[in-house]
Image 1 (cartoon, rainbow, N blue to C red):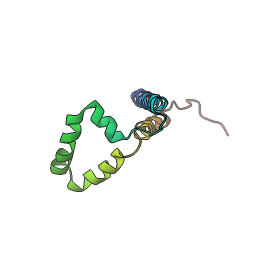
Image 2 (image 1 turned 60 degrees about the vertical axis):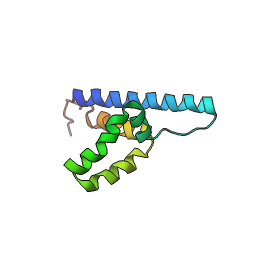
Image 3 (image 1 turned 135 degrees about the vertical axis):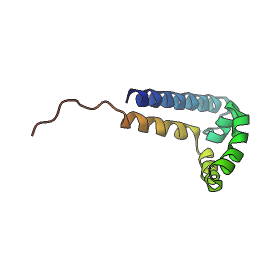
Image 4 (image 1 turned 180 degrees about the vertical axis):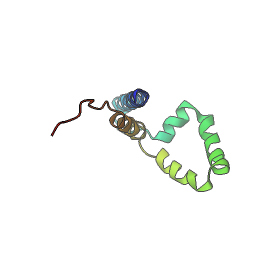
Length: 101
């Protein structure tokens, strides 16, 4: 459970960093646009993005690449933040005391 919470917090922190970068860009250009997940992936590691498509199509399933492309067009804040929040919620500490009726 603690590993899930740590990963969740790291994802939420990464989403916050991406949101701050989007806000800084907005202040600089006066045009607010959230960065897409694919754009962020390309900025971090363009070679892995280029290798992902043939690897998924050849070794996993050819039909799987199209849903991934759709996800890459979504805002990076959501693609990173929602799984982080879900992990935090799913791995939250449980109340150890049993409730009495």
